[in-house]
Image (cartoon, rainbow, N blue to C red; front, side, top):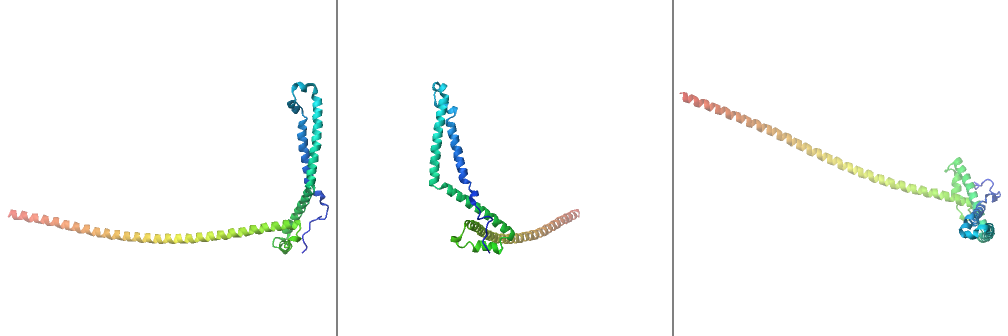
Length: 239
């Protein structure tokens, strides 16, 4: 399989150069705002006494405008020297080109994945074979490889978390089974104790009922005997 190529990769990438231009415009805007205040009427009133301000406002204003222009040229010259010494324009233009290539590659790779899927042989070859030799990698290869590594790292982390959760679930299942066994055993013991106590209570109740019946029978016999004895005494007395 041929390596992925972006459309118009060989085209002129100068169209992507924008960061240096934006930086220059921002510097000019900031400098203009600062120097504009220097020649404003408010600044003149604050810096010069009222007695000297009167009829000399125009002269003072023109003087400050000239000073502002001198400062503008001086600052712009210093900024240009700094940017030139650091090759800021070239570095920012290169950054623009790298970003433009990376964006184009990302779009093409996304389309390729949508059309073929992550499991396709072309995707695997791009991710596993074409990116092996780091010295032969282009900017887009590095970006693609970084995305792949991030996904693999994420997948590995997810697998570890899944294994950890499986272990936690297994431990919880074991603990639950142990607790259920303890509950069942305790329940059996409680039922046994309850049955024994109920049986004892029933036996004691029957025995108590028998004792009460016997005592009642004995009492009735005693009373009957007493009554019979009194009748005999009465008969004897009458004789």
